[in-house]
Length: 214
Image (cartoon, rainbow, N blue to C red):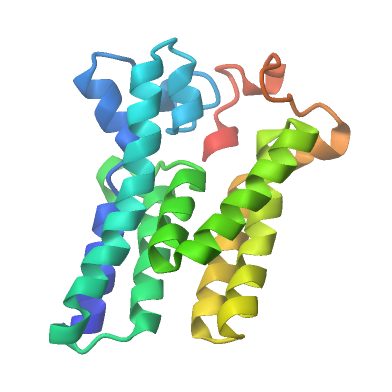
């Protein structure tokens, strides 16, 4: 196994730790894949009414993206890894969150992990993407719309700052996967039925609908 493959595998395994599932088990809560949207993420965990669990999930999912990137970057000098490999490690950590080997490949939508990866790869890109999310969320009050727009703009910020290279392609892939994971939300956006931040959830997000987070 080459150092590059070992680094990418390590990043994927780090990303495969689903904090929604882990935190829920430790705090005696139901598996987040069995209620609400079925999405193992902070928003769904919040449906239990346990804000601490939701916050820990959010932080854990973001920090594992940071950890994967920083760990591979720390190994880079000794293992002969490039910044492209570091960016790919971030992508693999993100994919690990979406399709975690530790949790029957039933992962979340990846917003928090993507944010952690981008902030660790380049704080300016991460902050630019986060600012995009905040602006859209503030004006439209729709979290999924903000996530989709931020996913579109992330490779734009990467290309603007560093050019159209392999790293920009990796960010574009991450953005495309994030948009795909929000396909049910996009359908509701087109129908005008997607809930606003602080509003009630639509019937499609009730326990009978598990496609929203898979």
